[in-house]
Amino acid sequence: MSTPQAKSADDTPDACPVIESLEQIGSQWRLAVLHELLAGEQRFNELKRSTGANARTLSRVLDDLGEMGFVERRIEEDAPIATYYSLTEKGRSLEPVFDEIECWAGSWLEDDPKSD
Image (cartoon, rainbow, N blue to C red):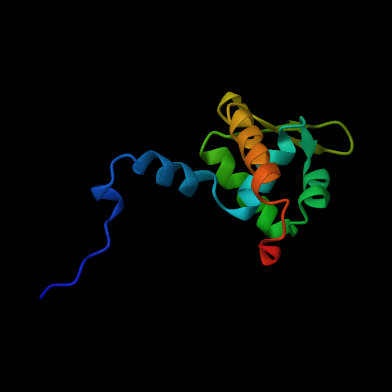
């Protein structure tokens, strides 16, 4: 008698875009940075403060998001030199996704699951 095998992402074509999307934006820090940048352009230290990420993590996340085309960096060379981060069109296109997640969270995460 054979045991059932778990389906891979290849076996469920409808799930592939979801899985691929979550692989790009699904980490805690990537989501936090993308969400913060929805409010507009921010400097590195502003993002560090608002997300709670340490400098090394934030730097890595911003580099990753930049390479994937979600975030762009602008350097202002006046004294002192300042680096600003903002969402690209691809990054801004995630706004309705965050809106839907917030709506879902408002409906499903308000109740204490222990009280059910």
